[in-house]
Length: 88
Image 1 (cartoon, rainbow, N blue to C red):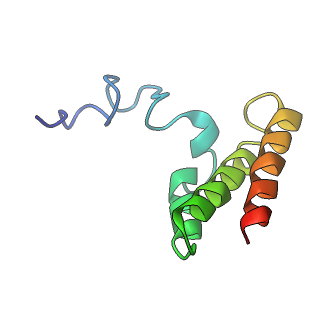
Image 2 (image 1 turned 180 degrees about the vertical axis):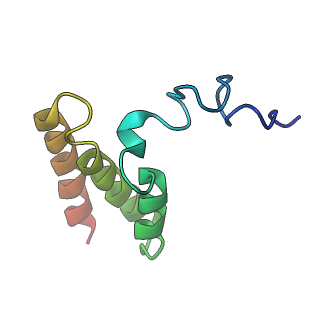
Image 3 (image 1 turned 120 degrees about the horizontal axis):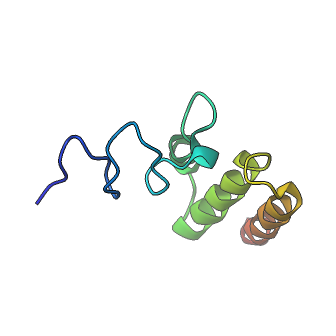
C-alpha cells in the first residue's frame, strides 16, 4: 500500500507542514537537502563502512549551526572523522 500523494513519505503530515521525519529543518537549510549531498559524496566510497562514516561526518558538519549545540555536533563529526581516518 503506497502513501497518499498529499502526504510526505514516512510521516502523516500533509505536504507543506513541518515534517520532522522526512525533511527536518536542520537538514533542509540551504539549496540542497543534506541527504542528497551525502548520497553524492559517498557514491565512490570503497566500502560501505567508509561511506557511512563519511556520511555521518558530513551530516554533523552540515547541521553545525542549526541545532543549538554546535560544539556537540563538531565533536560528533570529529568522532566519525577519526574512525573514517582509521579505515583509510
